[in-house]
Image 1 (cartoon, rainbow, N blue to C red):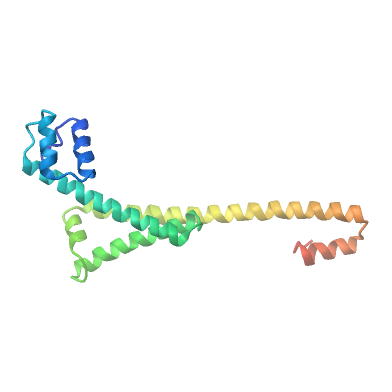
Image 2: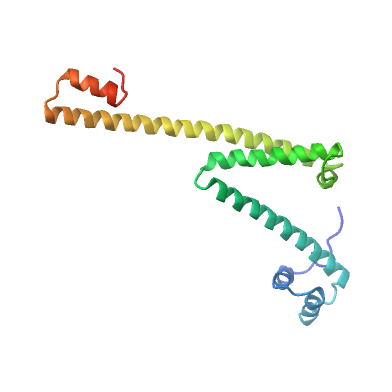
Length: 188
């Protein structure tokens, strides 16, 4: 494990100030000048440059992930959690496919390079896919259970309403049975 950079060794307030200044669009030299004003002299320009480059890469990835999530929300709208779970599974499948294709020279090699020599990373992807698949199954079971409970509740309500109307209007058992089977779809 490599030792912490001169920036990582700074107080959290200093690191937050660097992030704030970068977020406000300040240049490397402007941030370095601000650090000097805060009496921080053990950070070199190159260390700050590396740190800002990493920050920019993370920001870019986060922005990309946010754009994907927003696009999914726009596309799915009120689709519900089960469709989001399926979408997440498809996204992870896509990542794994990209990694597989990259290994065969058919796609970007960045993903493979990131996982090369890192079996734990591959294992983490596999576990994530497994957990998403199980969550999807659990979600589907939960949705089915809720639908079943809702249908049962609606059947009970309709049956009660039918009995009340039948009693109020003095309907015969034959008419009630026809209404139950043909209108409500309830079989005796």
